[in-house]
Image (spheres, helix red, strand yellow):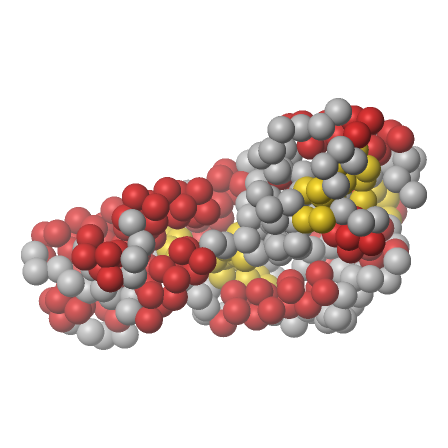
Amino acid sequence: MITLEIQKEYYQALLNKTTAYEGVFYVGVKTTGVFCRPTCAARKPKFEHCEFFKTAQQALLASYRPCKRCRPLSQPRQVSDTIQQLVEAVEANPEKRWKDEDFRELSIHASTARRQFQKRFGMTFVEYARARRMGIAMKQIRAGHQVIDVQLATGYDSSSGFRDAFSRIMGVPPIRSGAIRTLIAAWLDTYLGPMLAIADEDALYLLEFVDRRGLEREIERLRQKTQAAIVPGVSPPISSIEHEVGAYFAGTLKVFQTPVHLLGTPFERRVWHELLKIPTGQTRSYADIAKALGQPSAFRAVARANGANQLAIVIPCHRVIQANGDFGGYGGGLARKRWLIEQEKQGEVPLDDNHPIDCGN
C-alpha cells in the first residue's frame, strides 16, 4: 500500500523527472491506460489521474500497457543499441583510430554517436575511443614494448601527436608512464539506474549511481589518492561486479565476492567493516554503529564515514538510519535507500556479510 504522502512525493518526482526514482515506482495514467517510468518525457497528467505502483508487473496486472516513449519494461537509461554496437567495436579493436567512413560502414551517423556517448559517458565517442586506446598503450609500454612500436600500433604516425594525446589523458608523457597507475571505469545498467564502477586489475575501488550528488568530486579525490589516470574499459573486478549487481537486483545473490579496495582513514574503514555486519533486512542507527565501535559519542563521525563510503550496495551504508527511525541521508537519493531497505526486509534482495576486502590506504 502506497500512502498518500508517498504518492505526492512520487508525483513531484514525476513532474521533475527525477532520475533517483527510476525503478522505485511506476505511474499508470488513468486517462490513457499507459504506465510510465518517473523520467518519461511525455506531458504530465494531473495527480488525480495517476495511479502509482512499486513494480512494472503490478502496473501490467492493473491492465495498464507500457509507454512506447519511455519503455518502462527496460532498465532505466539502458544503453542504446548504437552505444552497445560501438562499444563492442571498440573492444574488438581498441587500438583503432576511428574515421568518418568507419561510422558509415556501421550505418551510424558520427553526430549520433557523439551525442549518445556524451549523454551516457560524459564524453564523445572519439574521446572514449582515444582514452581506451591510451589505456591499452599504457599497458603495452609497462609490459616492456618500445614506445615507437606502441605509437604505430595505436595508429599514430607522428610521435609528437602520440605523446600529446597520451599526456592529455594520462597526465604524463609515455616515457614516464611507469610513474603512474591506471584505473578502469565502466558504466553498468541496473534496476535502479546506471552505476559507475572503477577498478584496477585486482579490486573494485568505486561503485556509485551516476546521478549521485558530488560524484565528480568523489572521482577526483579517488584519482588524487591513487595518483592514477582513469580510462574507460573492462577489468576482471568490473566484469565480476556487473554480474553480481545484476544477481543482487534479481534477488539471487547471497554473497558479494568481487574483491574491493577501501580508501579511507582507519576510523572510516572500521565503520565500513561494521556496516558489513548488519544482517540482511535489518537496519542500525548511527549511534548503534558508534557503540559497536566502542565510541558511543562518535555518532556524527560515523555518519560522515557512512557518507564517505564509495561502494554503494556492496558496503551497505543504506542500512544505517537515524535513531528516531528516519532514513537520514543517502548519496544515491532517499528514494533508492528506502527501496533497498524495504526490498531487503521482504527478502527479495538477499545479501551476506562475507566479503573479500583489501583495506589499503
